[in-house]
Length: 22
Image (cartoon, rainbow, N blue to C red; front, side):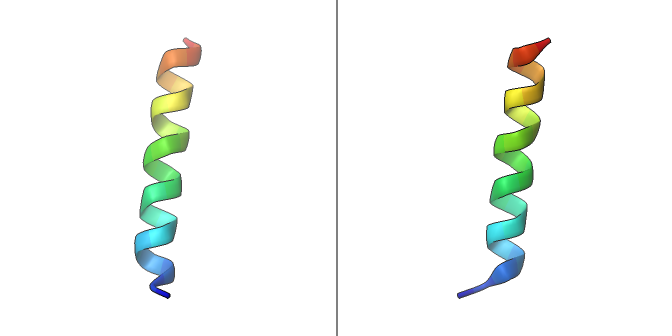
């Protein structure tokens, strides 16, 4: 498993969630 890809995906989802939250 590539932790980098997982971290990037998680960051992207978290970022989108933050934007939608605003």
